[in-house]
Image (tube, rainbow, N blue to C red; front, side):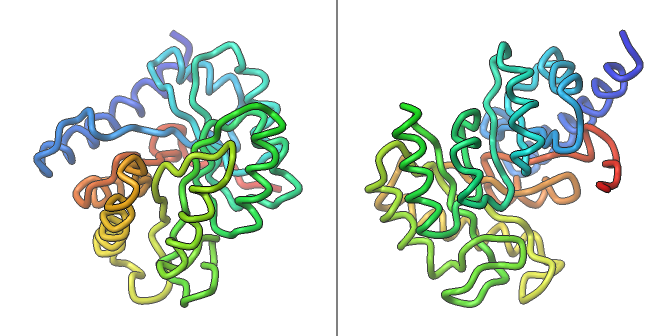
Length: 239
């Protein structure tokens, strides 16, 4: 076993223990929570190692990094999630490899994704990114629509060819009433998910929680956690 494979295996085992313990504490089956490893800034070789260790869901946030990495790993049975703020000029590229876009936060993006998915003959899962630090009608500092804007986007996704509304995503806010209150933020997201599922029962994916706060997300009911640093290590600074 190479040093890097041993390192990733140890880190992955540690994260798995945390997820299992959080599920047990919440009285949830471990199978209810899917681990997505955020591989941004790390090479395709790490993705291959992770696949060999059993990882099947990976995430990226920059198309210029993700597109070549996905191409280099096209032979692997992976589900690729795009989790970053997505500009419409990158949509066509992202639709080429992403299975799920977790950062849908405006109507223009819905129409662009739909057109690209139709051209590519693909169905793309979409999560509405909710910004719990945003005022009504505004977007959050790190992308996302305010809670009041969820229904409008959900209705647009319902009617968008090539797209499937899969659920909701959030990032714990750094400012506003939920700053430093991750569990409260994730509980709020679950409330929004409950409302969404009353009319759209298949939109049951709830993506919340990262390396530092995955336990709070699982306690609240998240179905997917996005973990990078705890698996891959501290990221190199981008130049």
